[in-house]
Image (cartoon, rainbow, N blue to C red; front, side, top):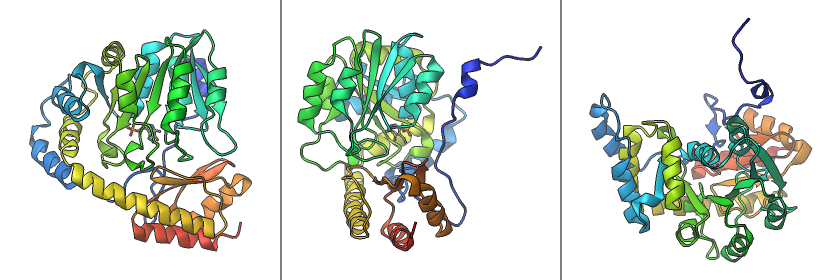
Length: 350
Ligand code: PMP
């Protein structure tokens, strides 16, 4: 006899993280190359001497800061160990074994893994030809067993954005007992005037959650902190299924400091947005197909040429993120990093 793990986990593919290769630049995980905001670094340094104490389990100061920032009641907020933890908590809080979670595919890789780990059923809805979410097909995928839907906008890895009007029209047609999670991990990089603001939508609707993170624009990926603005009942359930003390003390402190530095944030997002336009324009000029992106990455749907492209970038000391034979996702870095990537893209003859 030996110990037994769940048989269904044997088939489960692991989450694949972007690789760090010494001597190469990493454009594989949608991080910001600039680092954390300076105010956050100062706050982390100051808090470091207190890490022998457990963090505030209720994450009260950060919750209050978020409540004030967004003009919502603290009861509507749940903070998690990265928004990926909140994704899992959302499935835990809403689904039993036979319940279904509907999500676009391809999209954030954690959705299928988390759904399977929790033990619920996954329903993947293919993207449109234009690499965007297919809202009609997502509506058609709803069954009486559907409890949760992930709507990722801008979508990872394709960068495509839903417009406010189409999202609202979609939400009008989702049954009220289905919880819709607007995964807005890349919200701060959006500059389209027709973009939805998920927080405002979550305030107005009883079955919508807006989920955001400090990992991307705020540059705190290593500290693990994300948050959800949700109906009070959902936020309460999220807190209940959370592991105690899962949001560490430095993360809480750094997130508060970051929230209080809107000008630093705005400046860095403006830099990413202008570099994004430059990178995309150059790629298009080189003959690549690149969907419009509202995120801090571009998607190259290279199909069977993807592995060769990935290898070529690695040889040129640029780490990108390849998805099988579908495509490669490349994070927008500093101007210098982007130039290195563009040079690799230009010399690719796959
Ligand atoms: N949602 C999306 C769409 C993402 O791309 C990511 C990170 N890659 C996350 C959520 C999770 O981010 P974190 O756990 O770092 O907050």
